[in-house]
Image (cartoon, rainbow over all chains, first blue to last red; front, side, top):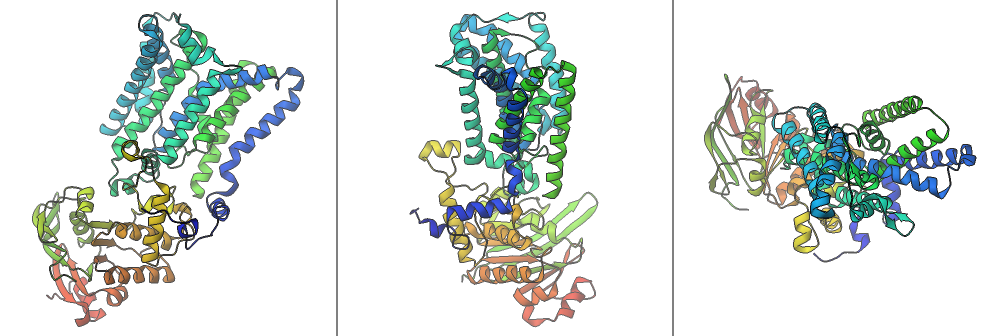
Length: 336
Length: 253
């Protein structure tokens, strides 16, 4: 195919790329799609002012927020694909723990790479089982993955009688959490890598467009010949594998595998994804939004702690934020 | 214009449990001709279209495409044979843009072998070809980058029809393509159908609107309670004739 000039590209539309962008901006939801970035700036500014004396803006605290955000962001990227496909994965928290244990079990004897790959493989396997049961037996994924949450949590608890498994491998810890490139924590680098990969897969790969199509209108996607069953399974595999990677990052940072890692991440992750502009009921997703949502959740967590809120109050605050985000998401879904 | 029919379905029967939806129905579609498929609700029109487009397997009957017999096992198979269907409701994917919709599940990739393996989209090429296709069919869309969800009903239907012919498909089945459209948008869709016909495409049009039949169709096949009750040249009949076939008052052909 011979390359054509830009003007040939849209003979019926606005001629310049800027014009095309403005046109899309006006018709595809306007400001709404940028709400998450505004919220991020607003919350950052607010905490910077009220928590100025508590060192919120200190580089060590910002780095801390980034570190806390890393597993949430990685899981949020995976969850965005599950939601985009019209599914949900409630088992992600337990997969984090499973992955950390598998890694801890194997890193000592077989090296950091084998440990990490085995952890990812075990996580992907959970995703395949989730997907197969949900699609083939036609059980909604929220029920299948809720059951899986119990099963994997149980396995993780039995793994080493509720005890931590230590990881004594500097390479593993260095690459997956404790180390970094100069002053930049490896966790921040992983956020960027996973976010960029997810964004690329959603927007520039056939698979990403098929995930979105399947979640938006499964019958229409079937009608053009997309294997929507396989697409849904693959989205749940993406979600589980991302959770597994989050488990590796936590294991690397703490140098342990433990049954309760990731236990309380589920709601935070869903909130991050939904705040970021992904529709809870499929057909719309933003990876950059999900990562930003994860940063917001970590920032809120950090700010609420610095403000001196008790754990109980933090739970309440987080719950309120999640309900607000979901309410917004549903209102948009009706408008569309 | 070739003389052999583009598609022949003969003796098609299909039943669902106790209900005989289609009983020994035959139909021929010709290149450069628009065939109307008429009938009251439940007469079997959509069932027949689904049998031809691979969504249903007929219980009996044979289907010939461009002269050779095929058992059409899936919508993908139908598409490979050059048959494209625009369903009444199953049309476009809202979050995807116009070009992405046009090429959905037939995407161009770039980056050679590896790009094809991972499905790396060639968005520029798809937009260019999309612009060409839409221009050829005289379909006007404000911007190819705009999401389908932000288009009007007529534009969405035009994109769906554009998708049907974008790959040079020679047989296009349209199930009530103007059902939810306004007057002007309907006219544009009818113009598009005429346009397809003039380019040698064999078109099957399901509709309830007799004026549309008289305006764009060359022949009409009427179903009544799962059986073919009339097959006529549109030039030979009046609106009243068609209505009486549809209600079962008369039969012909």
